[in-house]
Figure (cartoon, rainbow, N blue to C red):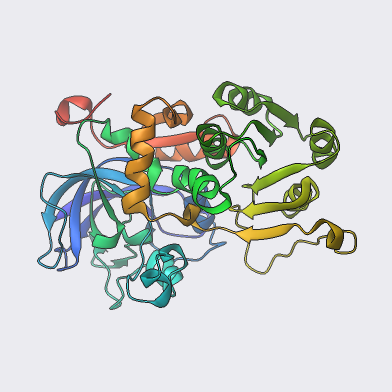
Length: 378
């Protein structure tokens, strides 16, 4: 079938809205009609080829939509189901079998490789040229996509489907880093470095589970103001540096029990580690470029016993964690919708520009009008 997709054809190139040919779903795939798709920093760094995926490619990895067809080997998903699309994993390696699927032994190939595991791609352009597909098992910057079954998360049908896409990666990553990875006990303190979509999701999660001091650190005053509205007890404007020192002052010289680094900047990670209390833990979800390094003080750190924890996708099992986040949202305890700004699919370039400029926290692309889908919320 023919469908419309945003294709990146060269390094740093634009997203070109083109007609592409989508093949039939394989037995272990689900064809989804996209309703919404979040714009994430990971899409931007792949377009820049910091993390290379073969080009031309259709990116997008925070999709939400409605199932149109189901492969013969797929169970637990039916035509008409509302779904969120998330990270892809093999389901067979030791990590997947142990419940640590975000550390799947085949994680990079299945999410950034541009093909199915057998080397085929679901997409061709109108000239018959191969277009990379299955980005994070989905390539959701397309009106239809053939999605690996392990990337599909069925959700309840009475929530606004367009809004749910960012739960598949950015929101899941920030919230999961707090709820699943760091697991701060009620009454503890946490500093979140970076008040973008991931960082603010972490703030929301920290509030939801009972952290009593939540410090948000950023260089954009408007984001810090929003962090306060969403539950941060303190904010630190890091434009002049000194974030670790300010956090130490706020905590009476002790530092915070937990810190989360979301920016991918080495100096910020160092500041997060320096802000920790004795036996504190810093979690890292902000990915630096491959090969980059961060220098830590290791002499006096021996007496502090702090820990460094690397985190992918919030250590989440999407099929269980995303429905949990939806229920918290329904109860008013996780208002991630405050982060979202909607854009028409045709305005994808503007969505990326606004995200890079910091004027939009979490852009979400809309593929259709509300009238086109009676099941879709507003």
